[in-house]
Amino acid sequence: MSSLIVDRVSVRYAGATGLALSEVSLTVPPESLVVALGPSGCGKTTLLNLIAGFIAPDHGSVMLDGKAVSGPGAERGVVFQHDALLPWLDVADNVAFGLRLRGVPARERQARARQVLRLVDLDGYAGHRVWQLSGGMRQRVGLARALAADPRVLLMDEPFGALDAFIREQMQSLLLRLWRETGKRVFLITHDIEEAVFLATELVLMSPGPGRIVERLSLDFGRRHAAGEPVREIKSDPAFIAVREHVLARVFAHRASQADVSQGVIA
Ligand SMILES: Nc1ncnc2c1ncn2[C@@H]1O[C@H](COP(=O)(O)OP(=O)(O)OP(=O)(O)O)[C@@H](O)[C@H]1O
Image (tube, rainbow, N blue to C red; front, side, top):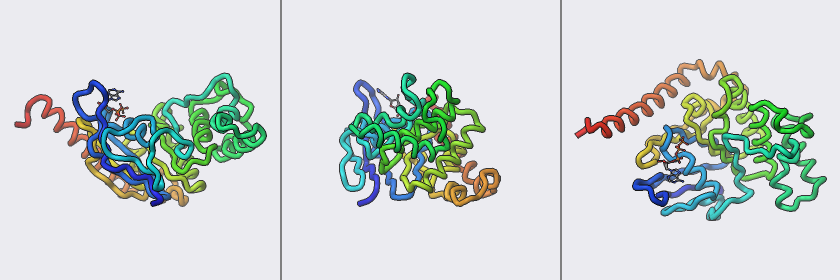
């Protein structure tokens, strides 16, 4: 089946008493942008690392388009929070690095690098060093690198977490444009409620202790922006504000109940 399917996965780290993830299931179908949102420790990174194939589940399975995920693979492109670029290489060589490892000839990988740099609005920067770029530009290079191998799905680990609010909003718009233009499925994790509500076609809300999914919402704000509606119009729409407040209330409710439990308030 043509989907990314996480089926009842559980993870317990060696030495840990509790589960980092408990019976988590989700599907990332074609043309979707699935966002996992939750407070620190709810297992977002663990879930992304499972899909990336960096770690294996203790129970359950991860399948991409009918094939079991059993390790990292070029069909899953990962964008990290910190750009993870190589400072001794120029921008084009950073973008083409994975292609070089796979033995793609120099001329072909340079052409591909230039093509994806155009997609992220960085044409003209191929020969720059990464230290000559701003934080937002470096994240765009990271995005271009993930796209260079033409993956089936993009996995994004808090990709805009280190950027200031203005650049962050620009990057959200860029991601939605790329998502529409390339047709890539995206799985993104964040702890920013507004970002999650704005981007997601499906929002999965997670809670810690053990890490699990507590709510799923189907949303269309990102689709509306990708279709041309301005960001500010969407974010000031009462429907957007209502969803944002609902999610905020859910996050606080879970946090409050956990604080109560840890203080022994709930019998
Ligand atoms: N390598 C590890 N060894 C042991 N425990 C770990 C390891 N990595 C994560 N954990 C624990 O697993 C749980 C889930 O962690 P994870 O990093 O996936 O959460 P997160 O939601 O991504 O948090 P954050 O937003 O802070 O990155 C936490 O309790 C964490 O302490």
